[in-house]
Amino acid sequence: MSREATVLFCCHLAPRNICLLRFLLEGYDGLATMTTVSAAAGLVYCLASGGQGESLRRLLEDFSAEGLIYSFVRVNAFELRRCLLN
Image 1 (cartoon, rainbow, N blue to C red):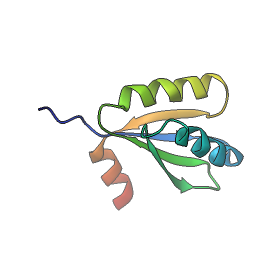
Image 2 (cartoon, rainbow, N blue to C red):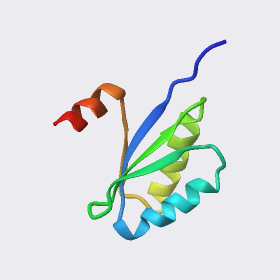
Image 3 (cartoon, rainbow, N blue to C red):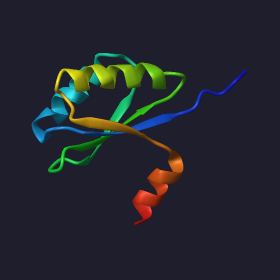
Image 4 (tube, helix red, strand yellow):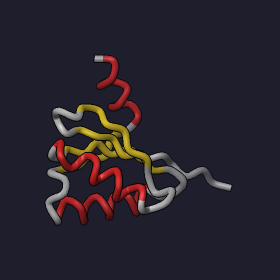
């Protein structure tokens, strides 16, 4: 049995869209969890596990194309730890 990697994306969006993004992600049961890093700056983390990383990436691309989010980037665990410690 192989273990599927956990995938983390950092997303930048308008602060007013944070609740909407959370609501939309909740509609995809079990796809991802979202944590707000900075509401004022519109920064959130979206975390997917169990092989859902690719599905989350495609969904974020769709949201970006529709203008819901400005940008997103996949973050590896080392980069995240380094950002949190600085």
